[in-house]
Image 1 (cartoon, rainbow, N blue to C red):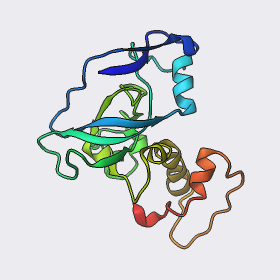
Image 2 (image 1 turned 60 degrees about the vertical axis):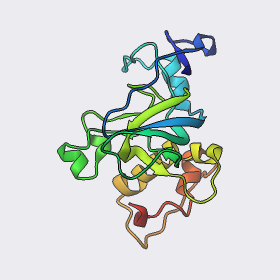
Image 3 (image 1 turned 30 degrees about the horizontal axis):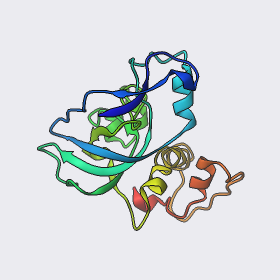
Length: 193
């Protein structure tokens, strides 16, 4: 498959469009044909280099992905090839105490799609089944790819950090950014948890 990746940190000139091996899925994973992948500021920071993170090189970034299910592992039951999906970028073990409490971002192995593993700047990406979400309604692939990382951040701030409960109101100041727009979205309700 083709992918955009970098072999060293730097500016846009380090990005290379090249052939890479196709991802191989496990029994609980889904292979997604990428239809859209948004550019998040995280992708730029990772390309430039984040001192605390030693990324595997060469590296494929891209946390905000939408696409079509291409293949599923033997244990996958919620989606099938051809389904239109977006990917939840938060990756955790799903088996530790924090994950069982619903605090997966506190999991010791927590990372994001495209951070410590390959992301969506490729023709295909693999993720655990639990990270695959059907695209709601008539959202285009482009619109769906604009959702994942900013909505995860908004959700985490509202429900995990602030402890927002059903029926409570929130004043959002500066709803011009991606996260601010997600906070201002009627789609973020605690009922969707």
